[in-house]
Length: 626
Image: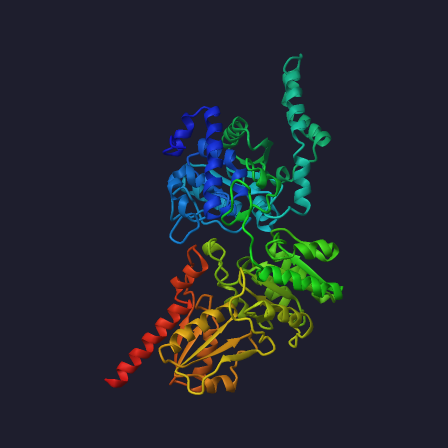
Protein backbone atom coordinates (compact mmCIF):
# COMPACT_ATOMS: atom_id res chain seq x y z
CA UNK A 1 0.00 0.00 0.00
CA UNK A 2 2.90 2.37 0.61
CA UNK A 3 3.77 2.10 -3.09
CA UNK A 4 0.43 3.68 -4.04
CA UNK A 5 0.71 7.46 -4.35
CA UNK A 6 -2.16 7.62 -6.84
CA UNK A 7 -4.37 5.37 -8.90
CA UNK A 8 -1.97 5.64 -11.85
CA UNK A 9 0.43 3.40 -9.90
CA UNK A 10 -2.07 0.55 -10.24
CA UNK A 11 -1.54 0.41 -14.01
CA UNK A 12 2.12 -0.44 -13.56
CA UNK A 13 1.36 -3.35 -11.22
CA UNK A 14 1.21 -6.94 -12.37
CA UNK A 15 -1.86 -8.92 -11.38
CA UNK A 16 0.02 -10.91 -8.70
CA UNK A 17 1.15 -7.65 -7.10
CA UNK A 18 -2.41 -6.31 -7.30
CA UNK A 19 -3.60 -9.44 -5.50
CA UNK A 20 -1.08 -8.72 -2.74
CA UNK A 21 -2.44 -5.19 -2.62
CA UNK A 22 -5.98 -6.52 -2.17
CA UNK A 23 -4.82 -8.59 0.80
CA UNK A 24 -3.17 -5.51 2.31
CA UNK A 25 -6.30 -3.43 1.73
CA UNK A 26 -8.45 -5.95 3.59
CA UNK A 27 -6.01 -5.98 6.49
CA UNK A 28 -6.01 -2.18 6.56
CA UNK A 29 -9.81 -1.97 6.57
CA UNK A 30 -10.13 -4.60 9.28
CA UNK A 31 -7.51 -2.94 11.46
CA UNK A 32 -9.04 0.52 11.20
CA UNK A 33 -12.75 -0.34 11.32
CA UNK A 34 -12.17 -2.50 14.38
CA UNK A 35 -10.80 0.66 16.06
CA UNK A 36 -13.23 3.27 14.74
CA UNK A 37 -16.35 1.36 13.73
CA UNK A 38 -17.88 1.64 10.29
CA UNK A 39 -19.25 -0.41 7.41
CA UNK A 40 -17.23 -3.61 7.29
CA UNK A 41 -18.72 -6.53 5.34
CA UNK A 42 -19.63 -4.49 2.25
CA UNK A 43 -16.13 -2.99 1.98
CA UNK A 44 -14.39 -6.33 2.43
CA UNK A 45 -16.49 -7.73 -0.40
CA UNK A 46 -15.74 -5.05 -2.97
CA UNK A 47 -11.93 -4.84 -2.70
CA UNK A 48 -10.98 -6.44 -6.05
CA UNK A 49 -13.78 -4.67 -7.89
CA UNK A 50 -12.69 -1.28 -6.53
CA UNK A 51 -9.05 -1.94 -7.42
CA UNK A 52 -10.06 -2.98 -10.96
CA UNK A 53 -12.22 0.14 -11.38
CA UNK A 54 -9.43 2.44 -10.24
CA UNK A 55 -6.99 0.63 -12.55
CA UNK A 56 -9.15 0.73 -15.67
CA UNK A 57 -10.57 4.21 -15.19
CA UNK A 58 -9.24 7.56 -14.02
CA UNK A 59 -11.48 8.61 -11.14
CA UNK A 60 -10.15 12.18 -11.34
CA UNK A 61 -11.84 12.52 -14.72
CA UNK A 62 -14.14 9.52 -15.13
CA UNK A 63 -17.19 9.47 -12.88
CA UNK A 64 -17.45 6.35 -10.66
CA UNK A 65 -20.59 6.45 -8.52
CA UNK A 66 -20.98 3.95 -5.70
CA UNK A 67 -24.65 3.47 -4.91
CA UNK A 68 -25.38 4.10 -1.21
CA UNK A 69 -21.66 4.84 -0.88
CA UNK A 70 -20.95 2.98 2.32
CA UNK A 71 -18.73 0.58 0.34
CA UNK A 72 -16.32 3.29 -0.85
CA UNK A 73 -13.47 2.70 1.64
CA UNK A 74 -11.10 1.13 -0.92
CA UNK A 75 -11.85 3.97 -3.32
CA UNK A 76 -10.96 6.48 -0.61
CA UNK A 77 -7.75 4.66 0.33
CA UNK A 78 -6.58 4.56 -3.28
CA UNK A 79 -7.41 8.22 -3.93
CA UNK A 80 -5.20 9.78 -1.29
CA UNK A 81 -7.15 9.44 1.95
CA UNK A 82 -5.42 6.46 3.54
CA UNK A 83 -3.91 8.54 6.33
CA UNK A 84 -7.33 9.90 7.31
CA UNK A 85 -8.80 6.53 8.31
CA UNK A 86 -7.74 6.93 11.93
CA UNK A 87 -10.65 9.39 12.22
CA UNK A 88 -13.17 7.56 10.06
CA UNK A 89 -16.75 8.78 10.77
CA UNK A 90 -15.51 10.94 13.64
CA UNK A 91 -16.36 14.62 14.06
CA UNK A 92 -14.08 16.57 11.72
CA UNK A 93 -12.72 13.33 10.26
CA UNK A 94 -13.27 11.22 7.16
CA UNK A 95 -16.86 10.69 6.05
CA UNK A 96 -18.05 7.09 5.75
CA UNK A 97 -19.82 7.85 2.46
CA UNK A 98 -18.79 9.54 -0.78
CA UNK A 99 -18.35 13.27 -0.30
CA UNK A 100 -17.15 15.64 -3.06
CA UNK A 101 -15.82 18.09 -0.45
CA UNK A 102 -13.13 15.53 0.37
CA UNK A 103 -11.89 14.74 -3.13
CA UNK A 104 -12.59 15.41 -6.80
CA UNK A 105 -12.69 11.64 -7.20
CA UNK A 106 -16.00 11.55 -5.29
CA UNK A 107 -18.38 12.67 -8.05
CA UNK A 108 -21.48 13.20 -5.91
CA UNK A 109 -23.07 12.73 -2.50
CA UNK A 110 -24.27 9.19 -1.85
CA UNK A 111 -25.99 7.80 1.22
CA UNK A 112 -29.39 6.51 0.11
CA UNK A 113 -29.86 3.49 -2.12
CA UNK A 114 -30.99 3.12 -5.74
CA UNK A 115 -30.07 6.59 -7.05
CA UNK A 116 -26.71 5.89 -8.72
CA UNK A 117 -27.99 4.99 -12.21
CA UNK A 118 -30.14 8.13 -12.37
CA UNK A 119 -27.23 10.36 -11.41
CA UNK A 120 -24.89 8.50 -13.77
CA UNK A 121 -27.26 8.87 -16.71
CA UNK A 122 -27.52 12.60 -16.00
CA UNK A 123 -23.74 12.89 -16.05
CA UNK A 124 -23.56 10.88 -19.29
CA UNK A 125 -26.09 13.19 -20.93
CA UNK A 126 -24.08 16.21 -19.75
CA UNK A 127 -20.91 14.69 -21.23
CA UNK A 128 -22.59 14.21 -24.60
CA UNK A 129 -24.21 17.64 -24.72
CA UNK A 130 -20.95 19.37 -23.77
CA UNK A 131 -18.91 17.29 -26.22
CA UNK A 132 -16.58 15.98 -23.51
CA UNK A 133 -14.88 12.61 -23.21
CA UNK A 134 -14.96 10.58 -20.03
CA UNK A 135 -16.55 7.38 -18.79
CA UNK A 136 -19.49 7.17 -16.39
CA UNK A 137 -19.86 4.12 -14.18
CA UNK A 138 -22.56 3.34 -11.63
CA UNK A 139 -21.74 0.60 -9.11
CA UNK A 140 -25.01 -0.68 -7.68
CA UNK A 141 -25.67 -3.65 -5.42
CA UNK A 142 -28.35 -6.25 -5.88
CA UNK A 143 -29.95 -4.97 -2.68
CA UNK A 144 -30.33 -1.50 -4.20
CA UNK A 145 -32.07 -3.11 -7.17
CA UNK A 146 -35.07 -3.71 -4.93
CA UNK A 147 -35.67 0.06 -5.12
CA UNK A 148 -38.04 1.30 -7.81
CA UNK A 149 -35.92 4.33 -8.68
CA UNK A 150 -33.23 2.01 -10.02
CA UNK A 151 -35.66 0.50 -12.54
CA UNK A 152 -36.90 3.88 -13.70
CA UNK A 153 -33.29 4.82 -14.39
CA UNK A 154 -32.36 1.50 -16.04
CA UNK A 155 -35.38 1.69 -18.31
CA UNK A 156 -34.47 5.22 -19.41
CA UNK A 157 -30.74 4.54 -19.67
CA UNK A 158 -31.21 1.48 -21.87
CA UNK A 159 -33.51 3.34 -24.23
CA UNK A 160 -31.17 6.35 -24.39
CA UNK A 161 -28.30 4.40 -26.00
CA UNK A 162 -26.01 6.71 -24.04
CA UNK A 163 -22.60 5.08 -23.37
CA UNK A 164 -22.84 4.14 -19.72
CA UNK A 165 -21.59 1.27 -17.59
CA UNK A 166 -23.67 -0.16 -14.75
CA UNK A 167 -21.70 -2.56 -12.58
CA UNK A 168 -24.08 -4.81 -10.68
CA UNK A 169 -22.27 -5.86 -7.50
CA UNK A 170 -24.18 -9.03 -6.73
CA UNK A 171 -23.43 -10.34 -3.23
CA UNK A 172 -26.95 -11.65 -2.61
CA UNK A 173 -27.29 -9.19 0.28
CA UNK A 174 -28.24 -5.63 1.13
CA UNK A 175 -28.12 -5.28 4.92
CA UNK A 176 -30.47 -8.15 5.59
CA UNK A 177 -31.18 -10.97 3.14
CA UNK A 178 -32.49 -9.75 -0.21
CA UNK A 179 -36.13 -10.34 -1.02
CA UNK A 180 -38.40 -10.27 -4.04
CA UNK A 181 -38.45 -11.14 -7.72
CA UNK A 182 -35.13 -9.45 -8.53
CA UNK A 183 -33.32 -11.73 -6.08
CA UNK A 184 -34.79 -14.74 -7.88
CA UNK A 185 -33.94 -13.30 -11.31
CA UNK A 186 -30.32 -12.73 -10.33
CA UNK A 187 -30.14 -16.25 -8.96
CA UNK A 188 -30.96 -17.52 -12.45
CA UNK A 189 -28.41 -15.23 -14.06
CA UNK A 190 -25.68 -16.56 -11.80
CA UNK A 191 -25.69 -19.83 -13.74
CA UNK A 192 -25.04 -18.06 -17.05
CA UNK A 193 -21.37 -19.10 -17.36
CA UNK A 194 -22.95 -22.17 -19.01
CA UNK A 195 -24.38 -19.88 -21.64
CA UNK A 196 -21.14 -17.97 -22.14
CA UNK A 197 -19.13 -21.18 -22.50
CA UNK A 198 -21.63 -22.67 -24.94
CA UNK A 199 -21.58 -19.51 -27.05
CA UNK A 200 -17.78 -19.49 -27.21
CA UNK A 201 -17.60 -23.20 -28.14
CA UNK A 202 -20.13 -22.71 -30.93
CA UNK A 203 -18.28 -19.69 -32.31
CA UNK A 204 -14.97 -21.57 -32.36
CA UNK A 205 -16.54 -24.60 -34.04
CA UNK A 206 -18.18 -22.52 -36.77
CA UNK A 207 -14.88 -20.79 -37.59
CA UNK A 208 -13.37 -24.14 -38.62
CA UNK A 209 -16.06 -25.48 -40.96
CA UNK A 210 -16.89 -24.52 -44.56
CA UNK A 211 -19.43 -21.73 -44.65
CA UNK A 212 -18.92 -21.06 -41.00
CA UNK A 213 -18.39 -17.35 -41.51
CA UNK A 214 -21.73 -17.02 -43.26
CA UNK A 215 -23.37 -18.87 -40.42
CA UNK A 216 -21.62 -16.61 -37.88
CA UNK A 217 -23.09 -13.61 -39.69
CA UNK A 218 -26.43 -14.84 -38.44
CA UNK A 219 -24.97 -14.81 -34.93
CA UNK A 220 -27.78 -12.89 -33.37
CA UNK A 221 -30.27 -15.64 -34.16
CA UNK A 222 -27.88 -18.28 -32.84
CA UNK A 223 -27.23 -16.34 -29.64
CA UNK A 224 -30.91 -15.91 -29.02
CA UNK A 225 -31.47 -19.61 -29.65
CA UNK A 226 -28.75 -20.57 -27.17
CA UNK A 227 -30.08 -18.13 -24.58
CA UNK A 228 -33.59 -19.49 -24.89
CA UNK A 229 -32.23 -22.94 -24.01
CA UNK A 230 -29.48 -22.11 -21.53
CA UNK A 231 -30.70 -18.95 -19.81
CA UNK A 232 -33.96 -17.03 -19.49
CA UNK A 233 -33.66 -13.70 -21.30
CA UNK A 234 -32.12 -11.06 -19.08
CA UNK A 235 -34.47 -8.22 -18.20
CA UNK A 236 -31.48 -5.90 -18.59
CA UNK A 237 -31.20 -6.83 -22.26
CA UNK A 238 -34.92 -6.21 -22.65
CA UNK A 239 -34.29 -2.70 -21.30
CA UNK A 240 -31.61 -2.04 -23.92
CA UNK A 241 -28.40 -2.94 -22.07
CA UNK A 242 -25.64 -5.17 -23.36
CA UNK A 243 -25.35 -7.74 -20.59
CA UNK A 244 -21.92 -9.08 -19.61
CA UNK A 245 -21.36 -11.70 -16.97
CA UNK A 246 -21.69 -12.99 -14.39
CA UNK A 247 -18.03 -12.38 -13.60
CA UNK A 248 -16.10 -13.51 -10.52
CA UNK A 249 -15.78 -10.27 -8.58
CA UNK A 250 -12.61 -11.48 -6.87
CA UNK A 251 -10.73 -12.33 -10.07
CA UNK A 252 -8.73 -9.24 -11.04
CA UNK A 253 -7.91 -10.49 -14.56
CA UNK A 254 -11.54 -11.25 -15.36
CA UNK A 255 -12.69 -7.95 -13.91
CA UNK A 256 -10.15 -5.94 -15.87
CA UNK A 257 -10.94 -7.77 -19.11
CA UNK A 258 -14.68 -7.17 -18.81
CA UNK A 259 -14.28 -3.54 -17.72
CA UNK A 260 -12.10 -2.90 -20.77
CA UNK A 261 -14.68 -4.60 -22.96
CA UNK A 262 -17.49 -2.56 -21.42
CA UNK A 263 -15.86 0.80 -21.97
CA UNK A 264 -15.18 0.05 -25.64
CA UNK A 265 -18.74 -1.02 -26.46
CA UNK A 266 -19.99 2.60 -26.63
CA UNK A 267 -23.49 1.71 -25.48
CA UNK A 268 -25.36 1.03 -22.23
CA UNK A 269 -23.63 -1.96 -20.62
CA UNK A 270 -24.54 -3.92 -17.52
CA UNK A 271 -21.64 -5.87 -16.06
CA UNK A 272 -22.86 -8.48 -13.58
CA UNK A 273 -20.17 -9.07 -10.92
CA UNK A 274 -20.52 -11.70 -8.20
CA UNK A 275 -18.83 -10.90 -4.89
CA UNK A 276 -18.82 -12.27 -1.36
CA UNK A 277 -19.80 -9.84 1.36
CA UNK A 278 -17.33 -9.90 4.25
CA UNK A 279 -14.66 -11.70 2.18
CA UNK A 280 -11.38 -12.36 3.93
CA UNK A 281 -12.73 -12.19 7.48
CA UNK A 282 -14.37 -15.42 8.60
CA UNK A 283 -16.79 -13.86 11.05
CA UNK A 284 -18.07 -11.39 8.45
CA UNK A 285 -18.32 -14.08 5.79
CA UNK A 286 -20.46 -16.24 8.07
CA UNK A 287 -22.70 -13.41 9.29
CA UNK A 288 -22.45 -10.47 6.84
CA UNK A 289 -25.62 -8.83 8.15
CA UNK A 290 -24.14 -8.80 11.68
CA UNK A 291 -20.95 -7.14 10.44
CA UNK A 292 -22.59 -4.72 8.04
CA UNK A 293 -22.23 -1.67 10.26
CA UNK A 294 -20.19 -2.14 13.41
CA UNK A 295 -18.83 -0.15 16.32
CA UNK A 296 -15.37 -0.88 17.71
CA UNK A 297 -14.82 -4.64 18.07
CA UNK A 298 -12.18 -7.24 18.92
CA UNK A 299 -10.47 -8.15 15.67
CA UNK A 300 -9.05 -11.48 16.82
CA UNK A 301 -12.21 -12.99 18.30
CA UNK A 302 -14.68 -11.08 16.14
CA UNK A 303 -16.56 -10.27 19.34
CA UNK A 304 -18.82 -7.26 18.89
CA UNK A 305 -19.52 -5.14 21.97
CA UNK A 306 -22.75 -5.86 23.76
CA UNK A 307 -25.26 -3.11 23.17
CA UNK A 308 -27.80 -1.92 25.69
CA UNK A 309 -31.48 -2.17 24.68
CA UNK A 310 -32.50 0.70 22.45
CA UNK A 311 -35.77 2.18 21.24
CA UNK A 312 -35.74 -0.14 18.19
CA UNK A 313 -35.51 -3.22 20.40
CA UNK A 314 -38.26 -2.06 22.73
CA UNK A 315 -40.50 -1.26 19.78
CA UNK A 316 -40.04 -4.76 18.36
CA UNK A 317 -40.65 -6.44 21.71
CA UNK A 318 -43.83 -4.48 22.38
CA UNK A 319 -45.15 -5.14 18.88
CA UNK A 320 -44.68 -8.89 19.38
CA UNK A 321 -46.66 -8.74 22.65
CA UNK A 322 -49.54 -6.92 20.99
CA UNK A 323 -49.49 -9.18 17.92
CA UNK A 324 -49.81 -12.26 20.12
CA UNK A 325 -53.20 -10.95 21.23
CA UNK A 326 -54.35 -9.30 18.00
CA UNK A 327 -54.17 -11.17 14.71
CA UNK A 328 -54.81 -7.96 12.75
CA UNK A 329 -51.42 -6.48 13.62
CA UNK A 330 -48.92 -6.65 10.76
CA UNK A 331 -45.43 -5.22 10.31
CA UNK A 332 -43.92 -3.76 7.14
CA UNK A 333 -40.34 -2.63 6.62
CA UNK A 334 -38.13 -1.58 3.72
CA UNK A 335 -35.10 -3.90 3.88
CA UNK A 336 -34.50 -3.11 7.56
CA UNK A 337 -35.98 -5.91 9.70
CA UNK A 338 -33.01 -6.04 12.09
CA UNK A 339 -32.38 -2.28 12.12
CA UNK A 340 -35.98 -1.52 13.05
CA UNK A 341 -36.19 -4.26 15.69
CA UNK A 342 -38.56 -6.49 13.71
CA UNK A 343 -36.48 -9.67 13.48
CA UNK A 344 -38.34 -11.37 16.34
CA UNK A 345 -41.71 -10.35 14.86
CA UNK A 346 -40.66 -11.81 11.49
CA UNK A 347 -39.77 -15.12 13.13
CA UNK A 348 -42.94 -15.44 15.18
CA UNK A 349 -45.40 -14.09 12.61
CA UNK A 350 -43.96 -14.76 9.14
CA UNK A 351 -47.38 -14.47 7.51
CA UNK A 352 -47.89 -11.03 9.01
CA UNK A 353 -44.41 -9.67 8.32
CA UNK A 354 -43.56 -7.98 5.01
CA UNK A 355 -40.08 -6.88 3.96
CA UNK A 356 -40.61 -5.08 0.66
CA UNK A 357 -36.95 -4.33 -0.07
CA UNK A 358 -35.56 -0.84 -0.50
CA UNK A 359 -38.93 0.49 -1.61
CA UNK A 360 -40.22 2.98 0.93
CA UNK A 361 -42.88 4.44 -1.37
CA UNK A 362 -44.34 0.99 -1.94
CA UNK A 363 -44.13 0.19 1.78
CA UNK A 364 -46.18 3.25 2.75
CA UNK A 365 -48.81 2.76 0.04
CA UNK A 366 -49.14 -0.94 0.91
CA UNK A 367 -49.56 -0.01 4.57
CA UNK A 368 -52.41 2.27 3.55
CA UNK A 369 -54.11 -0.54 1.66
CA UNK A 370 -53.83 -2.94 4.57
CA UNK A 371 -55.20 -0.38 7.04
CA UNK A 372 -58.09 0.46 4.72
CA UNK A 373 -59.15 -3.17 4.64
CA UNK A 374 -59.31 -3.64 8.38
CA UNK A 375 -55.83 -4.72 9.42
CA UNK A 376 -53.66 -2.89 11.94
CA UNK A 377 -50.38 -2.42 10.05
CA UNK A 378 -47.30 -0.59 11.30
CA UNK A 379 -44.67 0.49 8.82
CA UNK A 380 -41.24 0.72 10.47
CA UNK A 381 -38.76 2.92 8.60
CA UNK A 382 -35.84 5.21 9.38
CA UNK A 383 -36.75 8.92 9.46
CA UNK A 384 -34.26 9.79 6.73
CA UNK A 385 -35.72 7.14 4.39
CA UNK A 386 -39.33 8.10 5.08
CA UNK A 387 -38.53 11.31 3.21
CA UNK A 388 -38.87 9.28 0.01
CA UNK A 389 -42.52 8.57 0.77
CA UNK A 390 -43.86 12.09 1.22
CA UNK A 391 -46.27 11.78 -1.71
CA UNK A 392 -47.61 8.42 -0.52
CA UNK A 393 -48.14 9.83 2.99
CA UNK A 394 -50.30 12.53 1.45
CA UNK A 395 -51.98 10.78 -1.46
CA UNK A 396 -52.42 7.19 -0.30
CA UNK A 397 -52.63 7.65 3.46
CA UNK A 398 -53.99 11.04 4.46
CA UNK A 399 -56.36 12.44 1.83
CA UNK A 400 -59.01 9.83 2.62
CA UNK A 401 -58.88 10.89 6.26
CA UNK A 402 -59.94 7.53 7.68
CA UNK A 403 -56.90 5.32 7.17
CA UNK A 404 -55.46 4.52 10.63
CA UNK A 405 -52.02 3.49 9.43
CA UNK A 406 -49.20 3.54 11.99
CA UNK A 407 -45.65 4.57 11.15
CA UNK A 408 -42.77 3.74 13.49
CA UNK A 409 -40.12 6.34 12.65
CA UNK A 410 -36.76 5.06 13.80
CA UNK A 411 -33.55 7.14 13.97
CA UNK A 412 -35.43 10.43 14.39
CA UNK A 413 -33.22 13.40 15.16
CA UNK A 414 -29.42 13.18 15.23
CA UNK A 415 -27.96 9.75 14.42
CA UNK A 416 -24.25 10.52 14.75
CA UNK A 417 -21.51 8.91 12.68
CA UNK A 418 -23.53 8.37 9.47
CA UNK A 419 -23.93 12.12 9.15
CA UNK A 420 -25.88 14.34 6.78
CA UNK A 421 -27.54 11.66 4.65
CA UNK A 422 -28.90 9.79 7.67
CA UNK A 423 -29.86 12.42 10.25
CA UNK A 424 -33.63 12.46 10.83
CA UNK A 425 -33.99 16.23 11.13
CA UNK A 426 -36.81 16.73 8.63
CA UNK A 427 -39.56 14.42 9.92
CA UNK A 428 -41.36 16.91 12.18
CA UNK A 429 -41.36 19.65 9.51
CA UNK A 430 -42.69 17.50 6.67
CA UNK A 431 -45.13 15.46 8.75
CA UNK A 432 -46.57 18.60 10.37
CA UNK A 433 -47.67 19.81 6.94
CA UNK A 434 -49.95 16.81 6.35
CA UNK A 435 -53.57 17.24 7.53
CA UNK A 436 -54.75 14.37 9.71
CA UNK A 437 -51.25 13.22 10.66
CA UNK A 438 -50.56 12.89 14.39
CA UNK A 439 -46.96 12.63 15.62
CA UNK A 440 -46.29 10.92 18.95
CA UNK A 441 -42.98 11.77 20.62
CA UNK A 442 -41.96 9.30 23.35
CA UNK A 443 -39.09 10.33 25.60
CA UNK A 444 -38.36 6.89 27.02
CA UNK A 445 -39.15 3.20 26.69
CA UNK A 446 -42.25 3.31 28.93
CA UNK A 447 -43.79 6.06 26.81
CA UNK A 448 -42.93 4.21 23.61
CA UNK A 449 -44.81 1.14 24.83
CA UNK A 450 -47.81 3.24 25.86
CA UNK A 451 -47.84 5.17 22.61
CA UNK A 452 -47.79 2.02 20.47
CA UNK A 453 -50.96 0.91 22.24
CA UNK A 454 -52.45 4.40 21.84
CA UNK A 455 -51.71 4.34 18.12
CA UNK A 456 -53.50 1.02 17.60
CA UNK A 457 -56.40 1.25 20.02
CA UNK A 458 -56.94 4.85 21.15
CA UNK A 459 -56.74 6.77 17.91
CA UNK A 460 -59.32 9.51 18.40
CA UNK A 461 -58.63 11.18 15.05
CA UNK A 462 -59.12 8.10 12.85
CA UNK A 463 -56.17 9.17 10.71
CA UNK A 464 -52.54 8.17 10.43
CA UNK A 465 -50.21 8.18 13.43
CA UNK A 466 -46.44 8.44 13.42
CA UNK A 467 -44.30 7.53 16.43
CA UNK A 468 -40.84 9.10 16.27
CA UNK A 469 -37.97 7.94 18.44
CA UNK A 470 -34.17 8.20 18.33
CA UNK A 471 -31.38 5.77 17.69
CA UNK A 472 -30.00 4.26 20.89
CA UNK A 473 -31.33 4.18 24.42
CA UNK A 474 -33.28 6.31 26.86
CA UNK A 475 -31.92 8.94 29.23
CA UNK A 476 -32.49 9.73 32.90
CA UNK A 477 -36.10 10.84 32.41
CA UNK A 478 -38.20 7.65 32.67
CA UNK A 479 -41.60 8.89 33.78
CA UNK A 480 -44.54 7.83 31.59
CA UNK A 481 -46.50 10.98 30.71
CA UNK A 482 -48.01 9.64 27.48
CA UNK A 483 -51.60 10.02 28.68
CA UNK A 484 -51.50 13.80 28.13
CA UNK A 485 -50.85 15.65 24.90
CA UNK A 486 -48.51 17.88 26.91
CA UNK A 487 -47.46 18.05 30.55
CA UNK A 488 -45.45 20.26 32.88
CA UNK A 489 -42.72 18.07 34.34
CA UNK A 490 -40.94 20.86 36.21
CA UNK A 491 -43.08 23.56 37.77
CA UNK A 492 -42.29 26.89 39.41
CA UNK A 493 -44.88 29.51 40.46
CA UNK A 494 -42.87 32.45 39.07
CA UNK A 495 -40.35 31.08 36.60
CA UNK A 496 -37.63 33.15 34.96
CA UNK A 497 -37.41 30.69 32.08
CA UNK A 498 -39.77 28.16 30.46
CA UNK A 499 -38.37 25.35 28.31
CA UNK A 500 -40.64 23.54 25.83
CA UNK A 501 -39.40 20.37 24.18
CA UNK A 502 -40.36 16.82 23.15
CA UNK A 503 -38.89 13.35 22.75
CA UNK A 504 -35.38 12.45 23.85
CA UNK A 505 -34.35 16.10 24.25
CA UNK A 506 -36.27 16.23 27.51
CA UNK A 507 -33.03 15.04 29.10
CA UNK A 508 -31.12 18.03 27.69
CA UNK A 509 -33.89 20.35 28.91
CA UNK A 510 -33.65 18.94 32.45
CA UNK A 511 -29.87 19.32 32.44
CA UNK A 512 -30.21 22.93 31.28
CA UNK A 513 -32.77 23.63 34.02
CA UNK A 514 -30.54 22.16 36.70
CA UNK A 515 -27.59 24.28 35.58
CA UNK A 516 -29.70 27.43 35.51
CA UNK A 517 -31.24 26.77 38.91
CA UNK A 518 -27.78 26.28 40.41
CA UNK A 519 -27.25 29.92 39.41
CA UNK A 520 -30.51 31.01 40.98
CA UNK A 521 -32.62 31.01 37.81
CA UNK A 522 -36.08 29.43 38.23
CA UNK A 523 -37.23 27.17 35.40
CA UNK A 524 -40.34 25.24 34.43
CA UNK A 525 -40.41 22.63 31.65
CA UNK A 526 -43.26 21.67 29.34
CA UNK A 527 -43.02 18.38 27.49
CA UNK A 528 -45.02 17.90 24.27
CA UNK A 529 -46.18 14.33 23.61
CA UNK A 530 -48.38 14.79 20.54
CA UNK A 531 -47.96 17.10 17.57
CA UNK A 532 -50.53 17.45 14.81
CA UNK A 533 -51.84 20.01 12.34
CA UNK A 534 -55.21 19.95 14.11
CA UNK A 535 -53.86 20.29 17.66
CA UNK A 536 -51.55 23.24 17.36
CA UNK A 537 -53.36 25.62 19.69
CA UNK A 538 -51.55 25.68 23.03
CA UNK A 539 -53.57 25.13 26.16
CA UNK A 540 -54.52 28.04 28.39
CA UNK A 541 -52.66 26.43 31.29
CA UNK A 542 -49.48 26.28 29.26
CA UNK A 543 -49.79 29.86 28.00
CA UNK A 544 -50.40 31.21 31.48
CA UNK A 545 -47.33 29.43 32.87
CA UNK A 546 -44.89 30.82 30.31
CA UNK A 547 -42.02 32.81 31.77
CA UNK A 548 -40.67 36.06 30.27
CA UNK A 549 -38.03 33.93 28.57
CA UNK A 550 -39.30 30.95 26.60
CA UNK A 551 -36.91 28.38 25.08
CA UNK A 552 -38.09 25.85 22.48
CA UNK A 553 -35.66 22.93 22.19
CA UNK A 554 -35.80 20.63 19.12
CA UNK A 555 -33.61 18.20 17.14
CA UNK A 556 -34.96 19.20 13.73
CA UNK A 557 -34.33 21.97 11.22
CA UNK A 558 -35.77 25.42 11.89
CA UNK A 559 -38.19 25.64 8.98
CA UNK A 560 -41.37 23.78 9.90
CA UNK A 561 -40.29 23.14 13.49
CA UNK A 562 -42.63 23.17 16.46
CA UNK A 563 -41.22 26.55 17.49
CA UNK A 564 -43.29 28.02 14.66
CA UNK A 565 -46.42 26.84 16.48
CA UNK A 566 -45.27 28.58 19.64
CA UNK A 567 -44.39 31.82 17.87
CA UNK A 568 -47.67 31.92 15.93
CA UNK A 569 -49.75 31.26 19.04
CA UNK A 570 -48.00 33.97 21.06
CA UNK A 571 -48.44 36.44 18.23
CA UNK A 572 -52.16 35.63 17.99
CA UNK A 573 -52.50 36.03 21.76
CA UNK A 574 -50.66 39.35 21.73
CA UNK A 575 -48.05 38.05 24.19
CA UNK A 576 -45.30 40.38 23.03
CA UNK A 577 -43.72 40.49 26.49
CA UNK A 578 -42.39 36.94 26.07
CA UNK A 579 -38.97 36.63 24.48
CA UNK A 580 -38.73 33.35 22.53
CA UNK A 581 -35.40 31.58 22.07
CA UNK A 582 -35.42 28.82 19.45
CA UNK A 583 -32.88 26.02 19.77
CA UNK A 584 -32.78 23.66 16.78
CA UNK A 585 -30.33 22.21 14.25
CA UNK A 586 -30.52 25.22 11.94
CA UNK A 587 -31.47 25.20 8.28
CA UNK A 588 -28.47 23.14 7.25
CA UNK A 589 -27.11 19.64 6.81
CA UNK A 590 -25.09 18.44 9.76
CA UNK A 591 -21.68 16.71 9.70
CA UNK A 592 -20.91 13.27 11.05
CA UNK A 593 -19.71 12.83 14.61
CA UNK A 594 -21.03 11.53 17.90
CA UNK A 595 -24.56 12.55 18.86
CA UNK A 596 -23.30 14.66 21.75
CA UNK A 597 -20.75 16.42 19.51
CA UNK A 598 -23.43 17.30 16.99
CA UNK A 599 -25.71 18.46 19.82
CA UNK A 600 -22.96 20.83 20.95
CA UNK A 601 -22.39 22.04 17.39
CA UNK A 602 -26.09 22.93 17.17
CA UNK A 603 -26.21 24.34 20.70
CA UNK A 604 -29.01 21.98 21.76
CA UNK A 605 -27.16 20.12 24.52
CA UNK A 606 -28.04 21.00 28.12
CA UNK A 607 -24.83 22.92 28.79
CA UNK A 608 -25.13 25.08 25.67
CA UNK A 609 -28.81 25.82 26.26
CA UNK A 610 -28.14 26.89 29.84
CA UNK A 611 -25.21 29.07 28.77
CA UNK A 612 -27.23 30.79 26.04
CA UNK A 613 -30.21 31.47 28.31
CA UNK A 614 -28.00 32.71 31.13
CA UNK A 615 -26.36 35.15 28.71
CA UNK A 616 -29.78 36.43 27.61
CA UNK A 617 -30.88 36.91 31.21
CA UNK A 618 -27.67 38.77 32.07
CA UNK A 619 -28.11 40.99 29.03
CA UNK A 620 -31.70 41.79 29.97
CA UNK A 621 -30.55 42.54 33.55
CA UNK A 622 -27.87 44.91 32.25
CA UNK A 623 -30.37 46.66 30.00
CA UNK A 624 -32.84 47.14 32.86
CA UNK A 625 -30.10 48.59 35.07
CA UNK A 626 -28.96 50.90 32.30
